[in-house]
Image 1 (cartoon, each protein chain N blue to C red):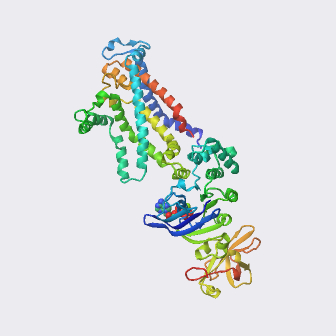
Image 2 (cartoon, rainbow over the protein chains, first blue to last red; image 1 turned 90 degrees about the horizontal axis):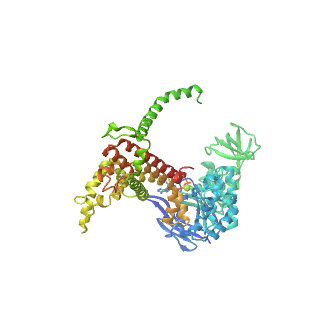
Image 3 (tube, rainbow over the protein chains, first blue to last red; image 1 turned 45 degrees about the vertical axis):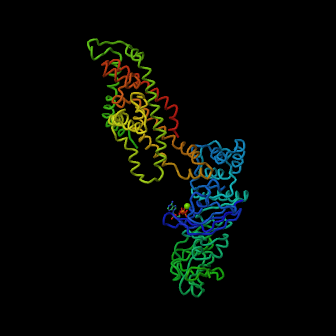
Length: 333
Length: 290
Ligand SMILES: Nc1ncnc2c1ncn2[C@@H]1O[C@H](COP(=O)(O)OP(=O)(O)OP(=O)(O)O)[C@@H](O)[C@H]1O
Ligand SMILES: [Mg+2]
């Protein structure tokens, strides 16, 4: 079981209110991702749930029981740190067995669980090494191993992949998703990587300056961002925003259109501009279009084969049913 | 890239310093060895002559020798124990954010700035003195008879004085080591269900092991040569209760004027110090690898 409820939870460091009171319900077995810009309070929120920080206000319920005053050990949660936080003087085996040893399990049971976790995580050959003798990905797996042997109510991950290189990141992302499929345990995952958030999450929580901007499934956030912040944050490359008369015509104070919802043509289309930088990814090409008189720059996705070069004049056509309208306060219409 | 020419130039430039240091070290050592094989008493210099190992035999079989070795070991081990344990405790205490942290840290390291003879005299006259000392006053205040620390427990009193001087050194080294421990490791251990004492035992102490090794090695080298504190407080007494090996050598040379025997004692002390050093490096030096 791992149902977590935050009710009016707030956090202040001295006078600075890092998290204004917020409510959030995380269902059992859900994979929840916290995203938001740097310094918005993602780690702080995770640490509040873990019990590593005391709440300034509000209550945290785990499986319906008030855990606000409980210490980190009593909450039955496991955390994987960005720096892995392995114990450098212990072997991999002792690292993974540490929480079991602290819980007072007998040696045979400890060994059984450690072997089990090692098999799941492909660590069997490394059990007698020290963390210093492992690669970054292996260390990450040891940290995850240390978390899963405890059979916690929920896993907390704080940017666990940000120290890995791109290829390893993709691999570990899949492994964590698979682990979630297998264990069906609640997981809370902090990242500022778009792709991680979109691919792994059942539910994304978008944070901005400690406030929750929107909660929803990845596609909900992509299709119906509730406000300008979420619209600009979810999706890569970013949505382009248009203001002024053209926006009024479309029926909003601001109108947003994603790069993939614009058609490029050398001759026809309502919006006209010149091509700036083009980013060729092979499958797709992203053009940065300037001088449209609508926005400083509009990003457009085109087929990988489209040949346009710097300085060319292009015409853009937005897909009418895919544009997002926002009022003066930045809220979706 | 160093060429043949630049390397030999470097060697030429360095050689005066190296030669000077070598001479500086080798001359006293050879002189000591030389005298240790000669009968050479400053009161009877005319009876100078080569006597093989007679000085060594006399020194090692003198009634005070084994007692002095035991006293030396007790002194070194006692001071090491107090400074390491006390240093860890104080470092843990001043590592956490407490009120007046800056001044407290300066106060903690201040004994290090006081010269050993001054420190020893302050302890002797202002703390341990059975009539005027602060401890005597404290004993009076709670209705006890004052205890003559230096008379009744001379070695323990000297251990206290020396430990007081070396505690700041141990504390400083251990504090810097403590500050290099990542807080995430402690938080991970906390999440893993380790209460504070177990966090200390399984995480903090192993992290400190290298610093403790450094403290033990450096202090041992200096503590084997402790002399001034004994000289100004007990003069090795009462009897020979606080006579260490160093003090015995001093006594032979400057109280008995037997330069030959003192030189032999010095060589013995150097050999013993090296044995201790090798033993220490074997036992705990592996902490310094990796
Ligand atoms: N111990 C602390 N004392 C004071 N302010 C803090 C403390 N910890 C965090 N903050 C502040 O709280 C805010 C949120 O920090 P937090 O670490 O949660 O950000 P984050 O969203 O995890 O950022 P990042 O993506 O860069 O990791 C920051 O403005 C930070 O300066
Ligand atoms: Mg963070």
